[in-house]
Image (cartoon, rainbow, N blue to C red; front, top):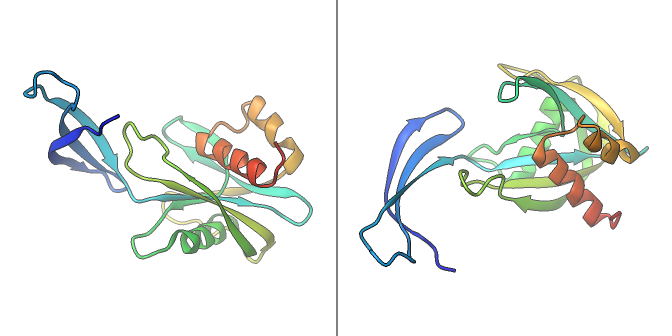
Amino acid sequence: MKKWIIQNKKLLKNLKIFDLFKYEMKSPYQVSQNKKYNFYVLESSDWINIFPLTVDKKVVFVEQYRPGTNSITLELPGGMINMDEKPLNSAKRELLEETGFVSRQWSKLGIVHPNPAILNNKCHTFLAKDIEKISEPQNSGSEYTKVKLVDLLDLERFIMEKKITHSLVINAIYWYKIKEKII
């Protein structure tokens, strides 16, 4: 395989958490080298996801409203990595803000590209063990979360029953099962 060639990149719109770009590209496989294709890419900072696990094998989830699906979702805590943050520091901040929990034991589960067709970023997933609640969620602005503890053994059932539908959350569960040799 060969990479395509970006001949021109134009910012179309700054959308707060994304920048929308138009990429004018040339295929390395075209007989006619003059043929150009337009692709639209959302550029964003990287994201993090946290798999927070209590000593008694409960996973800390958050319920929140998501306008994209106009629904209340059940998700793992997570968010965007600030420009001046390392992924682990962002994970610690998001866990505290969204749940009021902190952890003394962190490890990286993995990294994925959320949608390489239209997004340029990565999602880093961390396991947080030995967690404890030190405050209520620190909701602000447009974010409001409600903490819900889910038994580790119920995760697959929640996915099958469509109680958990967020692809990055399902990915984090899979990472956890691989790393803990549960699969």
